[in-house]
Amino acid sequence: MDTKEVVEHLVALKVMRLTKPTLISPKIVTCDFKDLPGNIINNFLKDDATSVVQMETLAAGQFLLLPQSFGNIYLGETFSCYVCVHNETSQPVQSVSIKADLQTSSQRIPLTTQQNQAPIMLDVDETLSDVIHHEVKDLGTHILVCEVTYMSNYNTLASFRKFFKFEVMKPLDVKTKFYNAESDDVFVEAQVQNITSGPIILEQVSLDSSHNFTVKSLNED
Image (cartoon, rainbow, N blue to C red; front, side, top):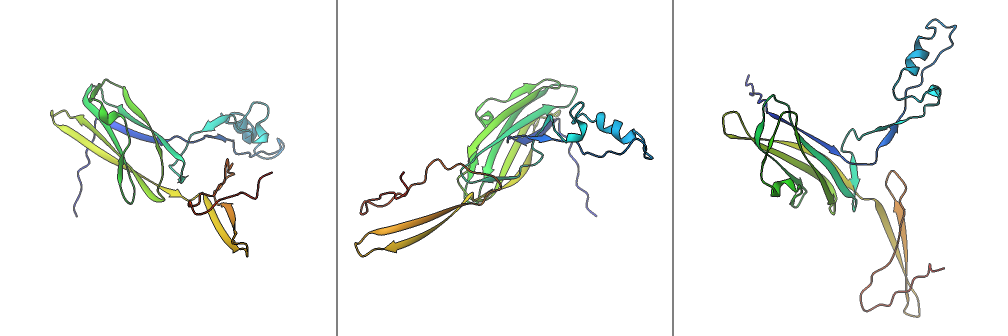
């Protein structure tokens, strides 16, 4: 059986998607003090760091929960993530740099600004970080490719990559109907449906037509 050699790198790479955090609530399990567990379960709930003091049984959270996965993103949203390289050794690491690309079905897009800067030295317990923002304009599977390069103990360049996959989904479903009137007018009915998992605020819905038509909205107040 073939075995692959495990390479221990001098630096560690961590990536976290930046999204709106949620409140984390304690798991409410209580019992009467006359029951067999006594106050053991109640005291455990009071000691839970996520519970609110003197309101432990209300399941009210007071801590924010950071994103635990990349999840999905909808077309037109801005994809944001935090990329961090940390020196976990007891010695400085030379020539550290980060490179990040977003791979779609049709193209590879360079993202991080650090790739335009010269490599730096990371002292013990120091980090090199970057915040990435990119407006997604394609549906389907996207892969964030992060590559870290540094100088190894043998004075040779070492590098490694990590891949993070996420899906870009369609937020709206638009259905149209056309009605031709005898006056040569064309009436267009558009049904816009929110197919996301949350509410959407529509700032504007308009129809862009060719120069052969004059458009007038029938929804004006």
